[in-house]
Length: 442
Image (cartoon, rainbow, N blue to C red; front, side):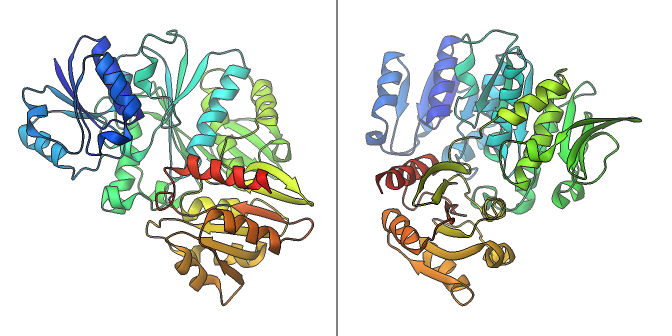
């Protein structure tokens, strides 16, 4: 079999390595310049894999039996369009890696909360005596796991809309859709296409599988697509089968049986959104026969994920919070609603159809000052400056210093950009690391 890999990022290299292990004929095509991929080129050379950079050529599709595409390679990419024209099957790296593993799997998607919920499920399973690994969009490509994990290790897969857009047979034992709000529309072209990509997570599930949905998300409820899987819900109101909040407690519900899990104040990570993430993770863990006591213990211990409401340090009684992973309006709303202390909000970056009016109520309630940066600096400033104190800065370092100058004892400075990072940084991880370096140098 001849396999053509499109994209030389982490997923593309992982797929190329797996294809080579399977003794396939492999070639890799990348649109960006080779100067950005020195380490990757060394790997490709060591494996004797043909490659091209700075554009795609037709010769790399000649006699190809399969195209494996990296996340984020747009549908309008010329090599993708040519493969479609030639009738060559195109799948995502997620699908390619999953096809060659025998492991049980849990897959999580949603506009927000994927990384936290994926990490939390893996934590609960491991803390309860199972073997589990967080993988997929969270950092470790599934293709990298082939030959490196035991068959009884549970895959806890963060699945982005990019990855799900090109699945064919992917069928996790448990799938979760946490929420759906407009995002990545430049890639998917329309909100409808984005919604359809999210729902693909359950498209190939069967009657033995489980689909977990957020009952409080209007977009999910209005767009439920056919699935053979059993469905459970998580919600702040009562459900017939699943988990919900009653008063200040979480309860499991099945048939006529109701079981108390815990008080929501005992959940270690802050915010209403993390109550939702915790409910989703609890349901997924129950599907693997984890005891309530172990779920409760894990939810009380879990310390969250890097770049998501991550406490950095306290200086002069002012807390600094790194929420660089908040790359859209919805994620920023949850962050700004998670604290009672007065907030100084650092925001900005590259927008993706951002509607800042959705943040007005929570900003007026919780934020005392906004410091803006990046391509969206003017838009954010102009939207809020008539309602609240706003300051424009040229870069993140000056923004942090300016925010600290505006702070008082007991305040929190929260970096929750509400925007993508690509105007100034490689990705949200790079952006968060720079923020923490600046804060720790104060």
